[in-house]
Length: 294
Image: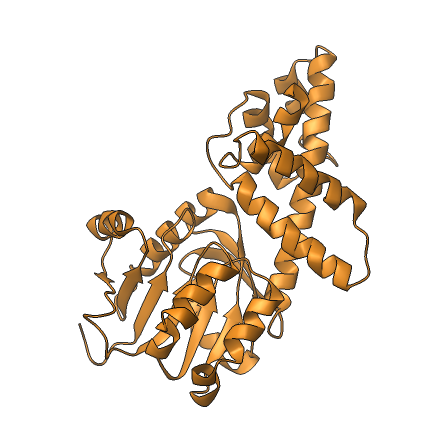
């Protein structure tokens, strides 16, 4: 471990974070540490990539230039940062780069922490889009909110696992943009599900249907990447139903705060909740089409 190199701690080696941290490990001029609650995952990661496992008792005095998070939800972040006090391992003027999808309340809770405030830390809400395959290939889209004066220092990090990084506004705007993203996806998948079922019950050749319509106005990322797996009933990959439920709840709570009644998104949320109640919570969100089999 070098004393002169900047030190970063990547927290969360799940579906997305595992590959994102792997891309980050390619940087030669940093010391990279990783932390994951499931130790067997950390062990697997270390067998494939270059870095060190952060063990709090062993490295009790270490200070990082920044923490990079990719965790499941608000509760996981609050447990790691505040309850387990990982935030106190960030050096003065350091940063927290959060790729998780969270509520706006989470940002407020972290940024009002005494250690955060007294050490002049910066928090960047930087949720990602592109799914597991985007993380593996390093071509995620990142929507980032936070202080403009410090964001340039993060581009070198994010460029390793993204094709697009857009500064959408101040703190919180990254998460608000991700809410827009998830609302779009929910509506698209509901529409795709209904369209595919309509085509199948009309005895159409759905592969030819895809060839006919995918170059026109109906084209979307979801159509390009999910249409054929949906007609093949293949959903054992991608972004889980239970995570979409969490994201839609966050978005609809914010919509309620904005005095909006998003009826379509509410209906899609109920459909996903029904899927989850039938033990399909770990399947890809495109499994929405399974509702027509109930």
